[in-house]
Image (cartoon, rainbow, N blue to C red; front, side, top):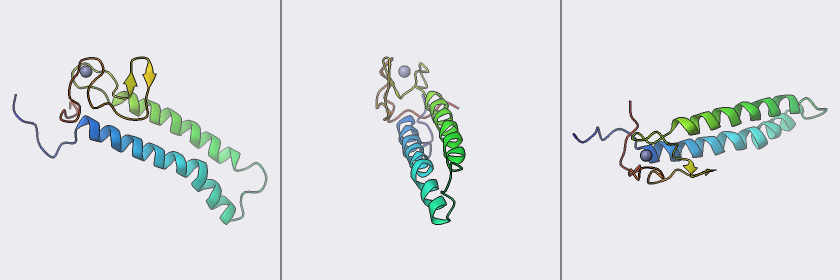
Length: 108
Ligand SMILES: [Zn+2]
């Protein structure tokens, strides 16, 4: 098998990016938006809940779906799953087939 293009990110790197972006955007929704709103004097009343809660719901769904899409290129198992558990950190080797995910690139 030819050595894959070196500019490609490995599955593990993509997984790490996904976690960093997910946590960053999650913190922004939970803390950043309320802070911004109170800075602008909009935090009074329950209006903020109507912004933060739907965003949080969208975030959870988007994050969960994306987590499932980042999967082992050989057997298709999500790299965030360890057996029955979903873990907040990508696996370095596939828990099902043992593929080294720090060198494997995402299948195109
Ligand atoms: Zn696998």
